[in-house]
Image (tube, rainbow, N blue to C red):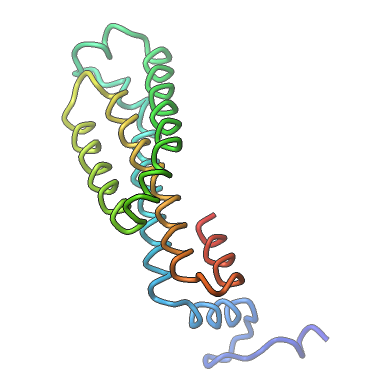
Length: 168
């Protein structure tokens, strides 16, 4: 029974999972793919600096705060600042997104994310504020993407649910 359910593709191999994935990929709308790609890139951009916090703390050439604290204290301080930035962003950014729209707020906050990334790469002393600013800006993206999806699928609840689930 198992072999009868397998389909043979063009090269003669039997891979039903690959065929099903190929069928699903063919159904994806390019606008949905762009929205999901933007969200994924934002998550990558915010995750890399957080992963690299111990490396920043161990920098032997970094003057100021980094050399006066031990690594664990520095990492704890940075992580607490980033959590504070993300929390403040989640409170404030929903109202901003509703006021100016998903597309505009997404663009503005992506510029903010780039600005704080630039600050993080050039600073020796305000790492915590830079990462907090990045987290603040990145917290907007879920709201902005959800607003864009809800505007796009306003009349189709099933597609809206699938689109929002693709962001999770």
